[in-house]
Amino acid sequence: MTEAAARRVPGTPCWVSLIVHGLDATQNFYAELFGWEFGPGPEQLGPYVRALIDGKEVAGIGQLPPERHLPIAWTTYLATDDADATAEMIRACGGTVAVGPLDAGDAGRMALASDPGGAVFGIWQAARHVGTALAGAAGTPVWNELVTRETATVAKFYQAVFGYETEAVVSADFDYQTLHLDGRPVASLHGVGHGLPRDRGPHWMTYFEVVDTDEAALHVMELGGHILQPPREGSSGRVATVADPEGAAFTIVQSAKR
Image (tube, rainbow, N blue to C red; front, side, top):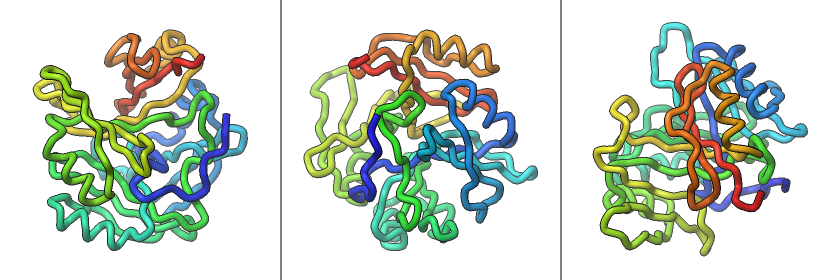
């Protein structure tokens, strides 16, 4: 395992966060699944905790107000040096800014937005909190992928806002692009056409590393979650797409190097 870089290049996925109805129950689920412990986080948007591995922050979980009924989903945050300027660029390029930009205490400045296809993502201007502080350990986010209808149009949006270079898979039946910053792959876009889940629409998917995908998938079910796509071999290792008891989908991946 390694400590993640201090400040990310703008556009790099730097944090993942989940807002749920039952904060305590959700903490228990992920503590059992990933071995997370929890510490307090900023509460500008309500009760919020940060998940820890070996004392290092890896993700956040907050609680929805009782009267709010929003889709429960993991949100990928992309780094920025100026949340206000990035928010303006999102609007100018056809996206929507739904929340913020606003200060999260002394941790940083953030906004919640959606791309022209409707996929929700966050932007994070780091101050005291730079984002995920650990990489390469079980229970840490290892990849972020936009699952959308088709990649060509939405790729132009993310290129314009964040300056990504893209590398497409040349295939008649596989619509996939990798996003690069400074020559390094940082995220991907996956066009699935009519295979997009009707109940979720376009969305960013978080991949979490596990020691054994098959065992972790079984554990998800034992803890009250669901398997959406059973364990299978992927390009990055053995993967499965699952959901927690409140329905938040995520992918678990057993790294090919293990």
